Length: 434
Image (cartoon, rainbow, N blue to C red):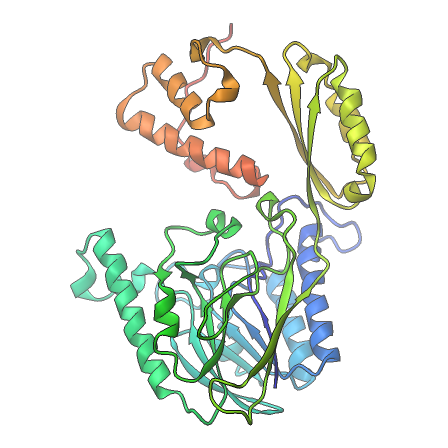
């Protein structure tokens, strides 16, 4: 039995894109669909018996009709070929309010053949060409689920987290106890566990993740052969009872995923083997994803533009078709010699120019006193600025929190229009002109 496991498709992420003149769609939407197409082609050409999706079909809880159509088209290609599809609900698929439909409920509503939607913690028996498979599904669970019960409503955050984790552990134990040992079983979860290495998904998640201890997933493991996990964008594997595998996202989202290999997992299970011994292999299959490239240039001479242009020329093959940002370290007094227009012209072969940032060495800032800027973190610099303007108390804390958010976005290559909410930001005090 061959299972294809993937996750975190995030159709609708369109930062660093432009409008495609042929289709009228965002080129980034086309990037994500192209990666999905590679997966579908592989499944159809390699006798895959089940495609298991571990959550987050879209970026938004309310995807556009176009995004829903393109997702459904590819699911339909699989099912028309007789390949069943299991769709788990992720945090980006959940509605804002209880009672509203998730972004993938339409497949259940229309009773689409060969499509199973994992909306609640529970076990589904999926029929494949190689026989039945049990899927223990753990969709994304947030605190609002507990808050519908009176006994949890007034708990402080720490106690609420502990109650949530205990409740999830109990529910999982019940599901594992129900597993039929005569049928192969996999766990499908959209979740964070304590040993996972998080990344860009943190910038896309509202609120804190509920954290599963690894022991919650493996101590009462029944006959589970493999855990197909989603939510963490970087591919990784944990577990010593059975593999706990994050397949990672199919397409790079931002500069926080620069250099990460993207793709999906292929799992081979022998249904005739003994429980706990059915997993024969699991391997990663990469897809072609849009490159993100950071060009770091230390310009030590009097003509920093020429140094940047030479660096671009040396890496021309990597620049072509990539999403590129340039970070230039300049000597004090030469920053006026950096020609942004010339650099942008040199980067025309790139798919998208994400910006040019400057770091001036040796420049003193009056508000830093005797401190040099290269020795001061952005957060500390903002603190000193607020002190100089006599901004204190809650107002200072609010501005510091927003400043930290901006720094995280810059580090990831994300601009305000790419997903931040500047309307909700506190008004910053304008600095008087010198």
